[in-house]
Length: 124
Image (cartoon, rainbow, N blue to C red; front, side, top):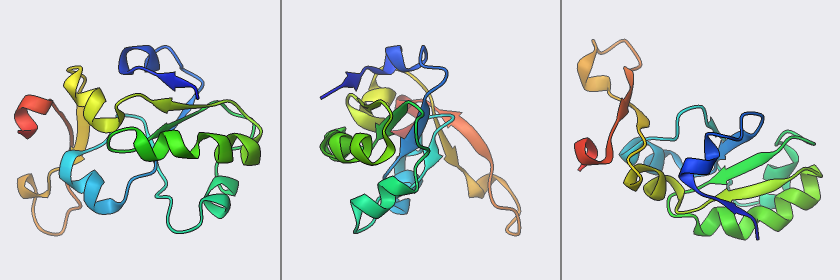
């Protein structure tokens, strides 16, 4: 199974970072900047068919377990290289790299929210 560490991810400029977590997980801690949100749902095969084919993909979940388990399925369906972000979103944040999150409390009610990077220390 191929894994990439948070520090190595910045060097993969052509890769699509796919955040496969559910909405409540994203809302709680935030997400890796530049990632595309595509929750897996109940059918990983169908989910994988909706991902970009032939492009390098980096799968991201909360801890790296779910994304690691999906590598073979996604690689088979998309035909491109697929890696897992080691440690997931938690590992990214623990390395000191910023996360992006919605902060609706800073804006009037009709606006969606303020996208901003937060450190793991600020989150805690």
